[in-house]
Length: 503
Image 1 (spheres, rainbow, N blue to C red):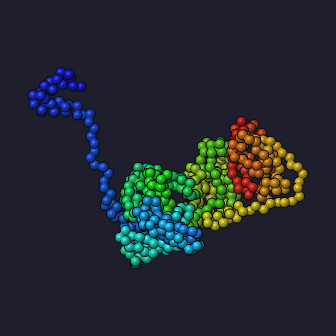
Image 2: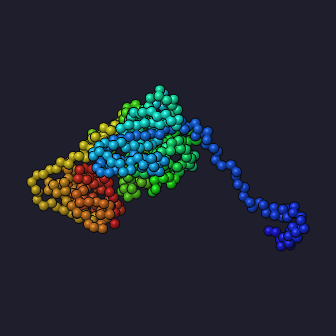
Image 3: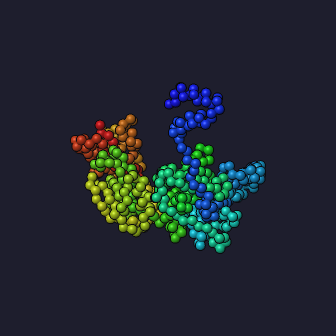
């Protein structure tokens, strides 16, 4: 601290014109001034210039049925805020259309070339869905007609093809999205609001995001500006490799608020390869129905931690319909990959080749074991599963005598016979003990259990009568168990596990 005497001397010297002395006094505490770096992130101009030629704008048109009255001709579906909006407003405003006549609707999106020799372009499925005509517009103004090679609705990926002789193409390649870390720089290029060739830069904000858009959600989240029209465009790493396909945003206004999502290249590249080779996807299939392993379920199964995917049912005719995997098993590892939570399993199975023999590690009644499974094809399995779910045949025999019932854990349970099958519409191949009533505010009601569901197992042991249910619950209480693990079947036979507190 500078003393009062020194400050007074400085003032006197200042008035006397001794400026150099005053500057020296003021400079004494300069160590408290922070040093500010003058250089920010390096320019991305060279990288952007190299990549712009491989990113394309995709325009589609679709014929839709006209409507009656003034204004019947539908407006083109341009991205909100497009600079072309005023033009179309002037052209279409107050113009009528023929009653019921087909009209053209247009939309815009983005894409990128991955094979210059073959003319292969990648985009989002939702960009070209239901399109009658697809055009690919390049950064130098050239436009080429595109044909559809294949689409995958589950990952929202589509592959197009243009004539490589019609234009000199520039291609980019997929990189490894698994190497991207939160905080790494990324660049998005696309066609937001119809403004082609737009470059934005940001970072990887998060990984492995599940936004409930499909069964294999594993998005990269980024704050690089992504808007309407960016869909299908690439997300690049610092080396100019595609590590994501921009596909979704969270925005109350329709514009970027810094929360965008990209399909990781690890997932997209395999889908693109299959679409190019087969025109469709060929995913691995295990043939099980699964649900999450909650803390209560883990405790009921004697597991130290809640992890893995709980097998709620095995699909008839599927790869494991030979008893190798059973309802109640917990899958904790698949083909060497740990299954931390339920949503991990569908993704790693789908990425596996059809017909591959894999090791699956399960926990069955508290014991860990490894089994060998040969994978089927998911697309074939979906047909089996839909057929199985559609089986709602019922036994409609003569009415039986009144059923015996029991009350347990807030539920009234009864025998499953012709009468109760008909009353609740329960399929003939469902077996167990039917729940005829659930008490309000009971533990069962809190778990969403409904009358008409059927208890097939308790603590992984089958039950067939109300007395079996009472005996199993009593035995669990004697063992000091706090939860009862119930396997419930729906009216059509779909299984799920539920834990109920027995306090």
